[in-house]
Amino acid sequence: MSASTLPIAADLLKAASESCLEAGSLALDLFRPGEQTAARTWAKSGGSPVTEADIGVDTFLRVRLSALLPEAAWLSEETVDDALRLTRRFVWVVDPIDGTRAYMSGSPDWAVCVALLDEGVPILGVVHAPACAATYTAIAGSGAKRNGEAIRASSGRTLAGARIAGPKPMLDALARVQPFEAVGKIPSLALRLTRIADGTIDAGLISPDARDWDLAAADLVLREAGGRLSGGDGGPVTYNRPVPVHGMLVASSDALAAPLLNALEQLRGQPQPS
Image (cartoon, rainbow, N blue to C red; front, top):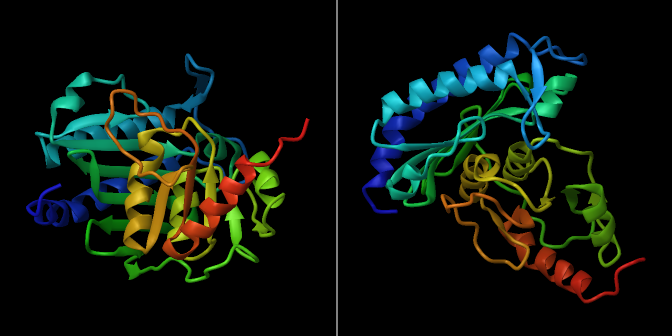
């Protein structure tokens, strides 16, 4: 990422945010709070669900975002991958509906996610959760906002009493070495990260197999709010690799990163229950 990227990101943020809001409105047309979606649904080749709203939002955003920055390549959950992205400086990374199962069942915890990568590093991020009336935005080096107001991750420095979200088996395992407050499931990975960014929760665990589109936009929001997303070994998260799949991930405020990683290291040293 070069110093010249900040003006690019700043110039694009307003239009990218407006595109996400319009895309969210398209998805809301078929969303039914507390009920099954009105959208047609089917299973993809790997068995995960998809709806006509996912496809419609993906198509809408590809047209809008590609017009904003024509030289940028494209990586999206609902578009066939194109290796051209590996040769481009800029890449749009999009999840048209992060949390499709939540969307289908009437839960509000789903989001439209857009990130712009510069040489594999997120420099612009938008996570728009229309059913939660929340829009998170960030530009590299310029802080993060929720609905236009600056946000900051929590300042707690100990895991005791920390509010942590994640898959139940991972939380149960962590509880064997460190007491904390487990919070209810947040089906959207992006919202799991942005709720750390705004201090709603303190940390989150993410099981292996997350993809770039689940993470990139919210990763930037979290980082700009004073948080951190890393591998289970504490290493950085890298994007726009040939296979955009990640292993176990850990997200928290900067202050909680070391205690959380230390607890996970203790857990790895323990015998596993049979």
